[in-house]
Length: 403
Image (cartoon, rainbow, N blue to C red; front, side, top):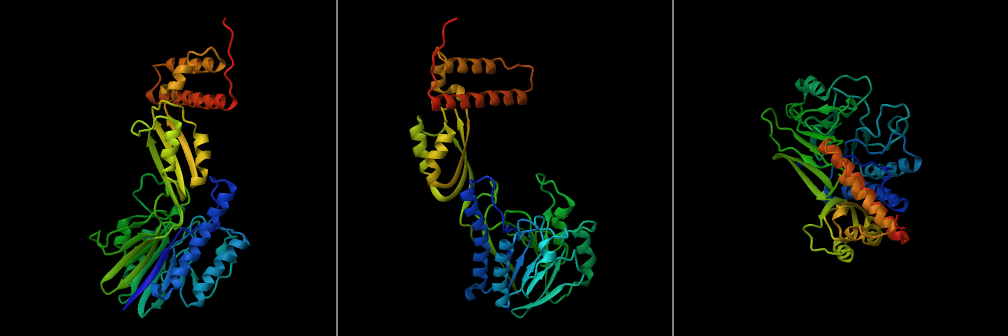
């Protein structure tokens, strides 16, 4: 016999991205709702053979979602409940249980939806899934609770049932990530604590990228630790493919299946004009058009020393219809461009502007640190680019009188 569990997390229903224009922000918010609905569709297909669903926190993007958002989530959970499919939900950090107004304290959820809102329980939630016994444990953050996940797992280990699949659920942070400033509410936990817990599977949420620990990675145990990641990337940094994760439990152990799932993709790219055969703005535009993808949300940084000025705003506007959304950052060196060299000799307001900025850059004090000097140079370069763009838009090339 075998049992299959759909493990999802960080759905952030109700999220509207602030970095997008209003119309695309609304469409993107709908993507997050659609992802949950499509996940429920998948779970309900007979050929998927899903026996239960785990939601590892941040089902909602906030603790007090509006009625429309609550109603949408109730409807999807109701579909699963009507099919007698158990759903296990732990609150996260965005939809925390820690406030009295929390949706998990005030909302009524369909039968068969288990809201694991108590901070912890030494007594597991026991379910029979396709003839297989499962014992589910969890730990949820609550203010004042000083017990760590590691302590909790050590306390219950001696009483774990020997004849059941043991699953631990938490919206937690793996320790050892230097870029992550962990707080108590992030529920820090080490891989060693999870590996030695006696659990078969740790169903986590909180990290937005897919992570799977090799089974048996630690000599202390055989726990499989998984973050499914988001179904749709929220912001730049959550780039690339997002996955729908199914966990298969059988006599041969645990197998994790991941399937590409997102409808739109976030990407960050750098284009160096020192290595690209591009010698004009027209050629650059054609090069960028070759990247076109109506489902791509792209952040593009252009670097190098081009022979022409980069008009980031113009390029982004010209490419707007080729992508779902594109942002362009100009990180090129403006001083190396041929137009700037030509403008240096103009007896115009534009020429005077270029000369003044070049003089400012050349006069940067040597005594300053390299970091400070680079920062000041970047400010002057930005001023030059913005000024040149303004001159180009307004056609300002008025001459100035000789002194």
